[in-house]
Length: 575
Image 1 (cartoon, rainbow, N blue to C red):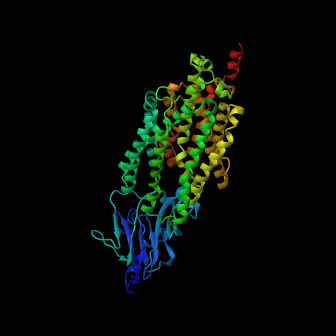
Image 2: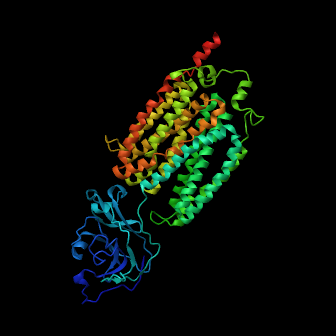
Image 3: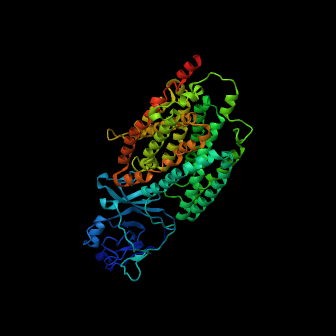
C-alpha cells in the first residue's frame, strides 16, 4: 500500500463518532450478512482502514463463534488491532494479515493460551494481534465480495474510501498437508504400478537403450512442469507429475541394475555406498542454492511469483547433464554387447579369494529353506518387503518434517534450508564412515542396527512425549535419522543384487528404486493425521510402524548370516 499525502478526515460534526465508523476503508471483504458491515460472521473478512485523518492502519476480522448481536463499539473492543505509528506517505509499505491457530503461527502469537490469533505484519514485522481460538478456522463463504475502498451497491457504507494505492494483493489459505499428501501419494501409487512393467522391460530388452529413450520422457516432464509453474495450472501440474514419475522410476531402477552389471560382487556394497554419497552431495546443492538466494533476495513475505519461478525452474537444466551421462554409458553383458558384465568377467578369470560377498556360491543360494523356498528368493523377497514396509511407514511423516520445523520449532526459511543442506552433507560423510563396518559385523546385522537407529532418532526429533527436545537436539536427531536410513539402503541393495539371478536384475532393482517415490504412497494418511491430530501423533504412528517392520527382516537375519555362506562353501571345497 502507498498512502497519499491527502489524508481522509471526517468533519467535526460527523455522526461517525457515534457510529464508530470514523475511518477510511482500504479493503473490505464481506458476504453481505446483516448490513454487510458489522457485526455478523462474514461481514468483515477482513476490513482494513486508516484512522480518522491519519495513515494509522487498523485491522478488523470476524471469528467463528463471535457475538453476532454486538454493536460496533463492542466489536471493535474485542476484534481489532492497529499499528502504533502511521504508515509513511508516498512510500510503498508491505502489509500481511494472517489468521492462524497456534500450531501454524511459526511462534508469532504472543499469548499461547489464546490458541489462535489474527496477526498484522508491516514490512515483515508483526505489529499487533487479535487473540482468539475462533481464528483456528476462518468463515467459509461461497459468495463473498471484495471492495477496494467503501462498500458499493447493493450495499451501503458509512466509511469513506481511503486515499491510497494498492498492488500485488493476494488472498488465500496456507499450504494444505492434505494437498501435499494427495500429490505425493499419486506419485507413490504410480511408482508401484509401474515397478513391475519397467523391471520386466529392463530385463527383456537392452536396458541401456531404454535408459536413453527415457531421457526424452524426462524432457517432456520438464516442459510440462515448467509450463504448469509458469501458468499456475494445477491440471498441467498433475500431468507433469505423472510423466515425471515414469521418468524417475525408470532411471532409478535401470541405473541400479546398470550399477550391478558393472561392479563385481566383492565391491558392490562399497559401490552402492558411493552411489548414495554422490546422490547426497547432489541433493545438498538445491538447499545450498536456496540459502544463497535468500541471503541475496528480499526477506520473508517479499518474494514474488517470479522469484519462486526462478527457484523452481532452473533445476531442469541439469537434465542435459543427465542425458549426456546416460548416453555415455557403454552397454555390457554377452546378450547385448561384446563387453562382458562384471559377473561374466569374474567367471572367465581365475577365482580369487576376497570378501564374503565374493564367495557367495550358487549352491548355497539355491538351498531350499523356509517352506522349501530357495534361499536366494526368500532373502531377496524379505529384504524388499521390509524395505517397502519401512518406506510406507516413513512416508506418513517424511514430507512433513519441513512443516514441523517451521510451524512447531519456529524455523525460518533460511534456517530450514541450512538444515536440509547440512543434512545431505552429513549423510555423505556418515555413509563413508559406515562402509567398512559391513565386512566386520555383517551386512544384514548392520542394516538392522541402522534401521532401529533411524526409529530411535525419529523419536528424538519430537521427544516421544517423554521430553521436550531443544532445537539443537531435534536437528541432531533429524540428521542421524536420515543418515541411518541412507546408510542402510546400499546394504539392502547389495544383498538383493548378490542374491537374485542376473537375468532378473531390473525387476529387483525396480523395487529398490521405490525409495524415491514410495515414501509418497502413505503421505495422504500422514497428511490426514497431521491435520486432524497434530504432527506428534503422526510421528508416533511412524515410529511404532518402523519397529513393527523389524519382524519382516527376521528371515534375512536367519538365512543370510554374517558369514553369508562362506563357511559352507569352504567346507564344500575341502571335501
